[in-house]
Image 1 (cartoon, rainbow, N blue to C red):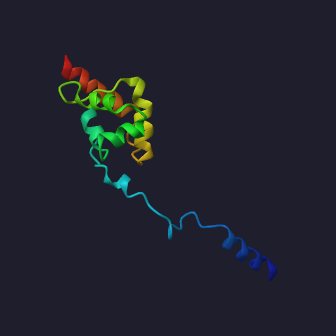
Image 2: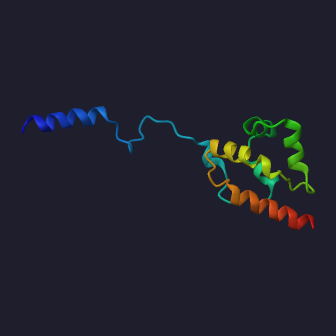
Image 3: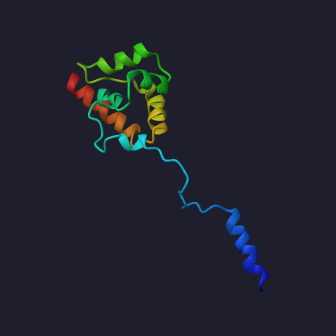
Amino acid sequence: MVTAPRVLRRLTLLVPDPLDFRGTGCTVQSMNASLTPPATFSELIARWPSITDFAKETNQPYERVKRWRTLNDGKGSIHPKYWPSVKTAAWGRGWGWVDDTLLARLATVDAEQAA
């Protein structure tokens, strides 16, 4: 009976506590994003430190990203075929709120304003 607790003690030392965050880094950058969702594609792109960073993280040419930002009278527009790369880049920054629903809403707002 004395050996069981000793074995358990050894196991607990070998298995890290998943809720113990001491000594681990945190992603502060994900906290920089405003809690208010962007109203336009241009506002979404502006969440990145620079257009160059956005272009690199979405694996798109700089000139294309620059054009996305300025389309639709400066409100921006991103074709749906590029949404997966935008979502992946945003999720890489910890912005899980960038999803198909948000991108579709931004596209709908852009279409309504263009009409």
